[in-house]
Every structure is written in structure tokens, then in C-alpha cells.
Length: 375
Picture 1 (cartoon, rainbow, N blue to C red):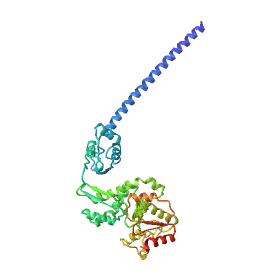
Picture 2 (cartoon, helix red, strand yellow; picture 1 turned 90 degrees about the horizontal axis):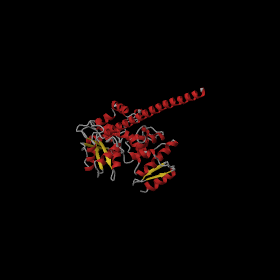
Picture 3 (cartoon, one colour; picture 1 turned 120 degrees about the horizontal axis):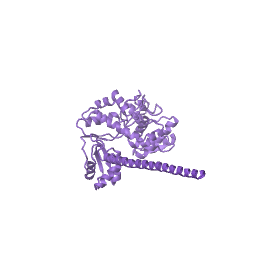
Picture 4 (cartoon, one colour; picture 1 turned 180 degrees about the horizontal axis):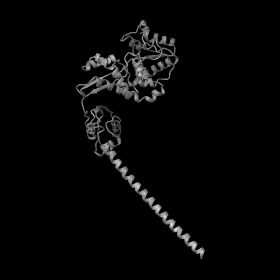
């Protein structure tokens, strides 16, 4: 009897345990289900809010004008990516599907001036008609290879400001300090070296700048040029680090290439000559630094010019000059970062602008005899 009662008790205990387990399982299932439903709702709401936000202008209050180039043959995906990269739209994927949903196509290639304040419909309309969003009041083109003084001459011709006013602005201690604070990775204390003629020499990027207000200030003119340099240099930060160079050294090196080069294909090879000379402690001996030291342009550099006492004269001073001697374009910047692998130590340009390279001084003299003395 006792054994039978004990068996019944064990069975009852198991039944109770299973009931408790069932309650726990149901509770877990209920909790998990509620969590999943909540997650679905949250994700759905988040997705809705994300899409709704992406359909709005990037900055409805912005007055900034941005140059956007749409290359020939660009499809909707490419155009969407370009617009997102330029900060005209928030999300390329949303813009692409919005355009498809509204049956928008046949977009025009070309150069556009757009703003972060534009709606998606305004952007689509502009791309369809090829209509520029806003015509600039003033456009200033700064070519490659110019000094600050040469840029000052352009500003004087294109604006109400004199070259003296421009030079006063770019050499203002207050302005330079503000630019160092605004672009700390670009403009460092290296520009304050006492041997440097103009701290911001080489920091105004060569490009065309559009202005949309009647009364532009010198800040309005100069700051975009510095900002453009900052944007360009940011794309090469990893390569600059690999070269163990500072940005200032890169701009200095690139400015030498900009002034020396005659053909795009030669810049990487000229860069290799400079690097080879730096590696063995040989002076760069580049004529443009002498011309910069002299403070003007000459058709021909004389032997007596090579002895001018200046920190910029690379005939009498080893290494790079203290700073850039002009503004360099992307081609020269890339050549400085990607030199050809050669053993060349010398080069010269013939009267047609072709460069001829040599590994030894004797070979260089032969090139000089062949390409210069007999011409």
C-alpha cells in the first residue's frame, strides 16, 4: 500500500512540474512574441521616419551653392550617388526609388549649380531640363601654378578689391589663425616658419569659383579656395601618411612639380628625380625656386641667380624649400604621392617642352648637348 501511494505521489509531482513548465514555456513564448511584435513596430516606424526624412531637403535654410558635374551617359544610380556625395540629397537609394516611382528619367548631363535647400522635385526638374539652379553673379578662375601675388592680380581685375587689399587679407595674422583653427589638418604651425614669405602660399586651390551675391567680401572669396584645398587633400591622407610627409611638405613638393612640369606624363618621373636627390642629400637645384627667391619671372636663369641668398633657393640649400612656391593642381599632387620608380638624378626640358632624364651628370651633359646646345 505504501509503495502504491508513493507511486501516486510521484505521478502527481510530475504532473505539477509539467504544468509549471508549461506555464513557463507559455510565458516565454508570450514574451518573445511581444518582443518580436514590438521590434516589428519599432523597425517599421523607424523605417517610415527614415524614408520621410530622406525625402526632405538636406538643409531647407541653406544658401550654399554647390557645383555638381553629371557626366555623359550617367544612369540614375550614378546620378543619385553623385548628388549624395555632394550633399544635395540625404540618401541615394531613396532618391533613386523616388525618381522611379514618379517616372522621372531622361536626365541631362552637364554642370549644375545646386543647393542643399532644394527639394527632390526641384532637383529632378533641374536634371530633366538641364536648367542651372542659379546663375552666378561672379566667377573667378584660378589656374594652376600661380603665386599669391599672381592670384591677387586676378582678384583685382575681377572684383572691387585691390591686390594690396587681397595680400593684406591673406597675410593677416588674425585671418591665418582663424584658418588654422578651421582647418587644423591642412594648415599647421609649419606655415608660421620665419623663412616662409607668405604663410598661405600654395593653399589656395586652382579651380573656378562661383559667387551668387552682389557684395562678396574677401573672406567669401578666399575661404572657399582654402576649403577646396582641404577637401582635395583629405582624399589623400592615407597616402600622405604612407609617404611620411606632412601636408605642408606635400604641397611644397607638388608646387615644384607644378612649376617644372611641361607634360602630365613627366610629373611622376620628375617627382622620382626629386625623391632620389632628397634620399642621397643632393640639392634639388630646381630653377623655379630661384625665380621665386628672386621675386619675379625671368626668361632665363643666369648662373649668378643661382647664388641668390634665400631659403627658397634649392641650389644653395638642401632639401625642400620652406614652403610652396605656387598652388598645385590634383595632377601634381598625385604625382608627388605616386612617383615613378627610377634611378634618375637629372632632367632638362627641350625647347618643345619635352623632358629628358639622366642617371649621371655625364649623361645629363650629353642630353644638354643634344637637346639644348644644338637647337
